[in-house]
Length: 115
Image (cartoon, rainbow, N blue to C red):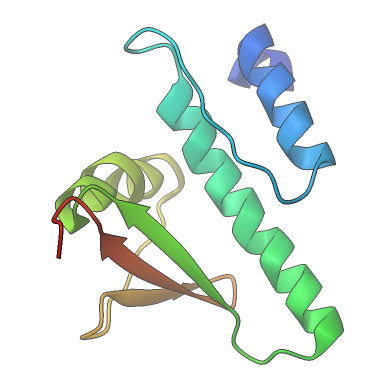
């Protein structure tokens, strides 16, 4: 399957930008069902692989990555369930809402509450 079949031209543009720039903020906008979440989820996986590659070169045994959403349910619904459905990934959480993927410890936080 080619990249043209996987992503729209706009998604390809964002993907190219994200893969060729470091340390940026990415805010996607568009209509519902326009493919923002699909692209963001794939970029999340790419980012974990990039973090692992960088930290291996630095000798970091267990890098950490923060995954934040409005609440833990939203992270589960919008990101983790979608990645499970698309790629068959399984996430094993510890008691601190962390899981490991690609050798990176992902710490999940909800942030919608003021405290």
